[in-house]
Amino acid sequence: MKDHAKELKAAARGGSRADKAARAEREVVAKIAEMGPSDRVMAERVHAVVKANAPVLEPKLWYGMPAYALDGKVVCFFQSAEKFKARYATLGFSDLATLDDGPMWASGFAMTEVTAEVETRIGALVARAVGPVSNREAREMA
Image (cartoon, rainbow, N blue to C red; front, side):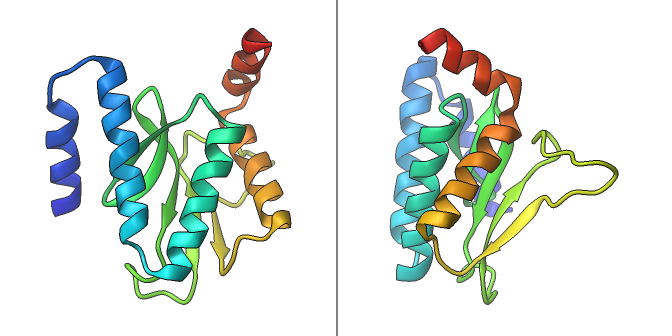
């Protein structure tokens, strides 16, 4: 909760939208750098894959975790194994992620390492999570 209070205070600071986005990016990169070696490697790869596959998502800290938001609302996040004293890290998705698949679907994925196969799967998940927004942006950029 203390992390979340700091995040809210930082978000309220003045500056342009671009300044706030750059500050949020730096904060996420710094938080990732503080992680233990295993979590740091996974978080760095997740960060790169999310940015490459869903550029519409903006990095931000969310309860002290690297997260990625659309219009300020978190769509996905990386939960460190070390921070939560778990045996695996988690890539989680909020209810805003359009991962719906019938009456039941996964919203969290356990990770012990990020291989090329895992990167591909993460890329597909985050692109799907933002749905038409990401596809529309990609067409506009082309």
